[in-house]
Each structure stands twice: as structure tokens, then as C-alpha cells.
Amino acid sequence: MKYKFIGLFTSLLMVVGCIIPVNAKVNVNTNNLYSEYAYVYDNTGDKVLYDHKGEERMFPASMTKVLTVYSACKRIKDINESVTIDQEDVAHVYEQDASSAGFVAGEKLTYKDLLYGALYPSGADACWALGRLIAGSEKNFVKLMNQDAKALGMNDSHFVTSTGLHDDKHYTTCKDISMLLKAALQNKIFRSIFTGDNYYTTTDKRIRMMNTLTRTRVKAHAAARSELLGAKSGYTSIAGHCLVSLAKVNGHEIITTTAKAFSTKFGVARFSAGCAVLDHNVLVGNVKDQTKNVKIMKKNELVNTIKIRFGEITSYKIKTSRDVSLLLDKNFAGAVKVSFKGKNVLQAPVNKGDVLGKIIVSSDGQTLYSETVKADRTILFDYKTLFIYVLKRVLVVLAILIVLAILLRIRKHKRKKRYQKYRERRKGA
Image (cartoon, rainbow, N blue to C red; front, side):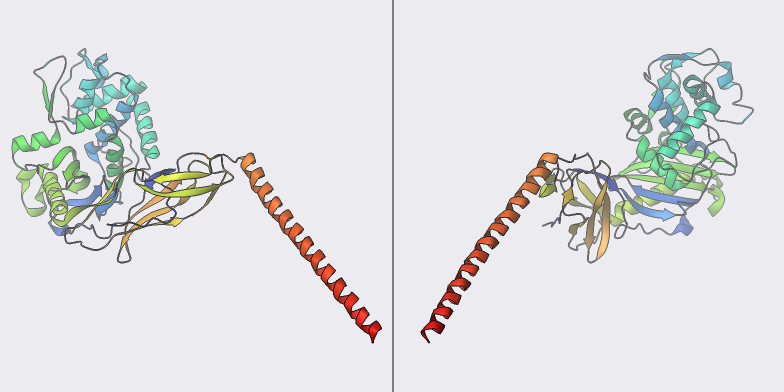
């Protein structure tokens, strides 16, 4: 496949994905989903595959703990550091009808135990302990959580607790939770926990914790598809059953978030939390069955050389910054065109973060993929280059003036000779 890049300034850029889903829609009959809200996101291709009320506010219940653990992972320097459970951390578990990791006051364990305890058994005791140890109190820790959410662009989210216990002012969207998991998975500690199967506490090897998928597989009432690598569930009587998961489908990481599922929707009460897993099975299954992985660009592919005016560098070799592959309809067989819409020539100074244009991948006039392109460095204005540029043009102008002067002199000389001949002819007459 031959790709034509027009003025593509990619090695000099930082790419921020802004994808338009065209040929990768997942066809799902929403009437057959238990969940009222659903959002499927291609984390590898940076593309929305399915959106059913994904940007509407909902109550996340214990999916909140994805943010709790992410915020904690960012601030814990040593996850193996020894800590002690306080009476304050376990005092309100039962009175608030919260899930527990089973920790007891005075117990010595590690931050690692708390992280797993918050995410696997969804322990409120682990969340409260993390909040107290990191920020002095849960209230202060929730402030940090909201700061992190804002930094991630979760613009329609607000968190009141670290546990997800119901509060009318504690809300988010499936899209925001998906973007949260996208960011959290970049943290190695979080990814290891989220994609694990089970965990034994360091202080008492008899205490085994199982993640959401392990629990559903053990119970066998809603066995998760093998493509599902990790998940975090949540439930309150108002929020319903919620679930955010990570799957590997056709070489791509797929993040799926659903909310407000009730097992009684189709008259089957015994499924409980498994109804959300069933929805993820359906959504992930459809992605697998309906799409194929199409490679578009290779990383470090030389595509062009850009001229830079008045800069500290005069030219720059352009290479693709990463591999780009798309999940497209399995029957897709069209030609793919890659183009750049933006500036073809750069003039210094160029500031880091300046928007230069967009990389667009299209087929038959339909946009399959687009990336907003920003400069990844600052290129300083170079006065020496400007001086040389101006000097060259001054010399060219002088040369032109000299040539014009010579031509004028020659013309004047010729006119003078013609005039002299004319006078001589008149005298002779």
C-alpha cells in the first residue's frame, strides 16, 4: 500500500488522538443489553467503537475505586512500605453497608495490600486507609481524586467519596470512566493489579483476594470471555450493576464501560453482578466478530523533509512517531489514503505545543482516523539565518540594479549613437 504524505511534520510533533469512527461501528441491539449506559473504546487505535448514552451522567458505585487506586499509585513512593490499619479505617464498614477487604484495626500490612484490597474485594476499609495515610483523611484524598480527574479531562465527573457509596453529587459518565482507565493503565503498578487474577496478602498468606473476573468465573454464573483481561465492578441499589473492563481483541486493547444494569431486566434475578459481565461479553464479542486489524503506518517511517525558515535548524527529517492500526469492518477492502492538512512550511520561532494541522486517514471520502498534530519542541529564531537570508536578497537586488544600470547605460549609448547618425544624415542633406 502506497501512502502519500503532503507536508507531514511528524517526527517534530507530538500527536494527540482525535478519532472519528466511520467503518468501525459495533452493531449492538441495545434492547438486549442489561445496562442502560454503554461505551466501547479502542485504546490502541484511540477510537470510539460504540456509544450508547456514554456521555450522560450516571452513578459509578465501586467503579470509583479505579480512580482511588490510580490516585494512590501516583503518590505512593514504595508499595512495599509497611503500614498499620487504624480503628478509623474499619469503624464504618458495617454501618454504611460497605464491602470490606477484611482488614482489622492494628493489623500491619503494606501499601500493596491496600491497593489490591481496594480493587479486588472492593474494600472500603482499604480505601479509607489509603486516604488517611496519603492525605490525612478521606476528605482530603477525594480532593486529590477530583484534581486527577480534572487533569485527565473528565469534565462531567465529580467524586464525593473514595468508595463510591451513593451520593447524589457523586457522578460520572461511561466515557469519563473509560478515559480514566486509559490513563490508569499507563501506570505499571495499576496495570499489574488490574490485569491480575488473585492476590494473597503479605502479612497473612491465607487471605486470598480475587478480582472481578476471577470471582465471576469461579461462581460460573456469568463466565467472562477469554478476551477480557481485567475488570472492576460496582453496585448500589440506585446505580445498578456497573463494570469497566479491559480486553484484547484482534491485537487491540478494548476498554468497555457499562452502568445501571439490573439482572431482573429480562426476568432473571440469579445473574446478579453477572448481568454486567454478560453485556461486556456481548460487546467484546461483537468487536471481535465484526472487525479486523488494518495496519496503516509504521513507526519511524521516513516520509518527508520539511524546510524551516529562520530557525536554528534549516531542515528536518520527518518520520512517523508510532505504529497506527485501525479496527475496521471485517469486510473492508477499500484503498486507504493518508494525507496531512495543515502547514507545509514552518517559520521560526515555533513553540512546543503549537497546532500544525491534522493527519487524516480516509477511504472513499470517509475519514477513518484523524490526529491533531502539535509541535513537540521549540525551534528558536536564528538571527544569523535571517541575516544570511536578508544579505542574499540584498545582493540579488544589488545585482539586479547593477544589471539594470548597465542595460540603461547601453540603451543610452545606443540612443546617443542613433541620434548622432541622425544628425549626420541631416547635415549631409
